[in-house]
Length: 433
Image (cartoon, rainbow, N blue to C red; front, top):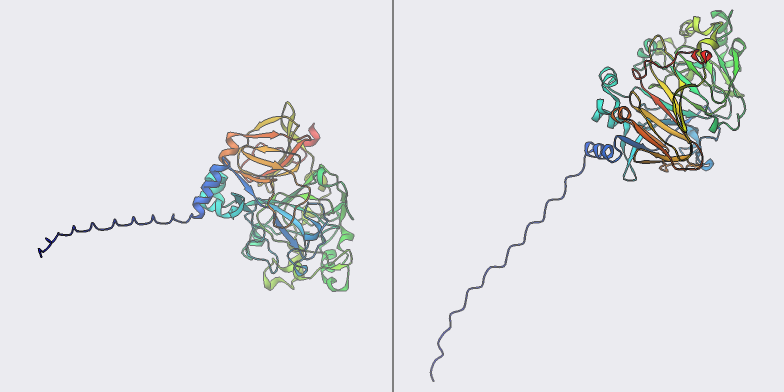
């Protein structure tokens, strides 16, 4: 039998090699996210609500937080009676987490990073060269505070005093938005300063009586009736017991204070709230605590003339008006100012400012640049809203479009940092109209 010829087998070609999978994208850093958010908002950052409790006060229930969330942080922390705006300042509350009081930027529908981190990353681009070069931070903030009754008679330390405990002093200002003050709650009056003729010995006796009930310090002060649509400028070391109107409060970026009243509406004030921001070795030095007050300012017989504010028109156009609501200098320095912008339905207004600002709406709806503005009726704790933004220095200087697309006036409040509005009015200028 003939043998079959052997057939050489063809060598198999090797299987093609699989292409390596592309490396996963590098995780985005905060710097990437910050710049993305700035680009998406054309220099305007959306901010999440920042809620702050106070253990020694009772919430007034008018700043839109849902009633069931007033004690969302726990009854031991106290009721939530404050909302802070464009804040890079932490709240000095006992038991608070380190980010309490800090504003968070919202990007792609989520809380992404703090405004403090954005300022640290972008510096002068966000807040302007003069502020960045001098302070290396956004050195101011504003808030709503809303209480059922009055706050204890207290003062905020000066820079010199606060530096002794590693902090900064705190001048502040008040404006009472009409939109949030349909009711005045229990005591719509504020005690300011001390009556002329009061002596240091009088106040010394009050502090010595701290633990016997009411120490009587309000017997030496005067209460002023609060009117929605007006305000006050309050320097450091001046006693004040804010009343029960909802208050918009531009101020320096610090949370130092000293309570000089021992009993408020029957509730004791812990003595630790008198001494917490004074050096430890001075806590029992009553003379030191009395001398910490700016005596001449407290007993000023023209106190109202030197501190009371009424709105002054800054600029207006067809269907819109911009008013100064906070102005004046503290110890010769312009530290913060604020304006109230009202835009009628269907009107678009382009507003240019000298520098960065934090903004909150109090009425109406529309747009600011690319971002939606909507004044909420009720806010759940943790909910993201569309009523608060931070406008960067560059965007503010170029001019921002406000567009009222609603059926009622769009009303916004915006506050500015130091060195921004040197031509703002002086205290008392409202009388010249």
